[in-house]
Image 1 (cartoon, one colour):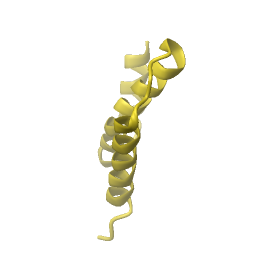
Image 2: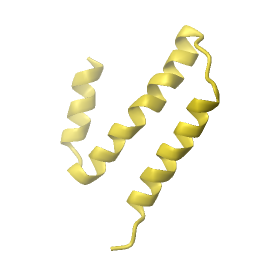
Image 3: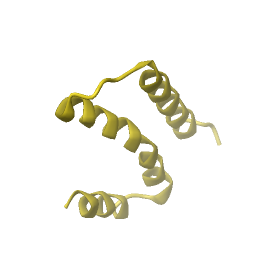
Length: 64
């Protein structure tokens, strides 16, 4: 179900925007593991998450 909805959502938007959401999967997966499975989040998660978010923002707002 979730895989179908993910692909359907990507189908409805431009490829250039949809490809950026691919990089948020590790962040969402880690947060869901923390919320649902009581996994621990360490500093690597936060550093990596910040780098991913900054990279996506830089790519999105880059002047052309």
